[in-house]
Length: 287
Image (tube, rainbow, N blue to C red; front, top):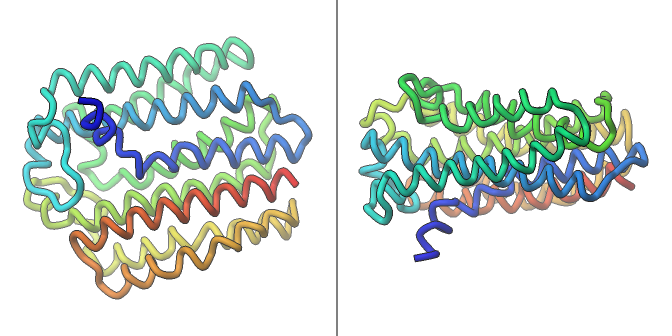
């Protein structure tokens, strides 16, 4: 069945990989050096890495028994929709696609990109895999910010510009925070089940009230970043503020105490904010 693999890919989370590439390309365009085929390959790398990470997460949590009771969408292994070995193979295939695209970029730009790719693969697998998964230790948000924010955005700009400048670093904070917001609301929803399974996510460690504040900061923070980029570098970066109204409802719902299934709707709304703000920021940077 095709649908089960689409389910396992977690389409709602994929804006986290598209947005940093778009923003990084906006940075390159601001310098007059956007290269379409390199941006396209960077997008393939980012998407394949995230899909691979999602399958790897499904596999590792499934064999550990972490996903046996959960509120969100069903997982392939835990629900019996796919055998663990098949999900593991799907993760490796996705990582292989990312590796092939990354190899082409490395050959065209710099071989040191292979080290970044290897670190990204390791981060994707070890999130919930391996003997000491960092996602179980409350470090998921930090790694998401680094890899889906800084590395993906700055890397996408670098493969087109051949250098890294201050605008790339500043702009990278916005997609990083938006990606973290997705993880924070996901972990907020799963506090009870994660706690029972011994999964000590940041949300489990700091509790629901602080997690709700963290979500609001991560969802609204990117608009402050866009404003800063507009003031210091590219005035049209302020276009991202047009998406601010989309962030109001999910922020209010989370701060008002939304729980369980209601947070599944918030997750979708967060993805829409991510896409809209990211696209507008990318256009503003390029203008």
